[in-house]
Image 1 (cartoon, rainbow, N blue to C red):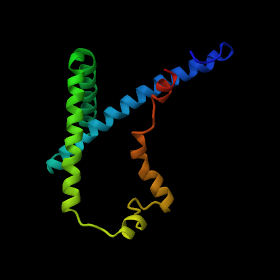
Image 2: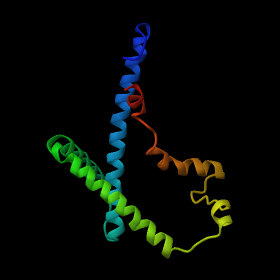
Image 3: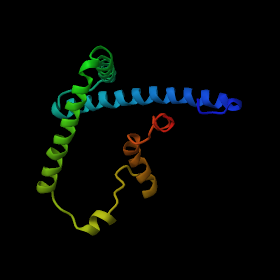
Image 4: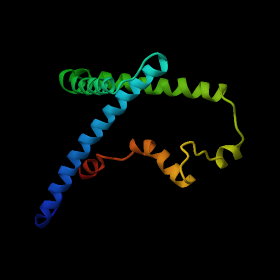
Length: 150
């Protein structure tokens, strides 16, 4: 839509790559939620033996829940989003207050000059970059092109 007529093929390529990116992001988000649920099951029940097929079933349960909320119960979507907002705000305070008051406090120099390489990577730079992958995943901006073009 935004490409000049002589370069329409690039617009189609960009569009299809964006669709593929949306699908991959949705799949990876559901997979992360499913494995997070399985991780909580392991954490709360030490006798639980996590099997790969159970993680797959949890993945599909998350997918079905997302489809249900967005398709079948679309009238509930604003209420569900409000509930999630409330949980995020209260959860933020429920985690940050005990962390501030109950944790051991370090000096400023320890906080800003101590770097750990718990994965035994060959150097600190590689350890930092591997450790940042999970954090950056949420901020990739897969739909940024859509927001910019509208």
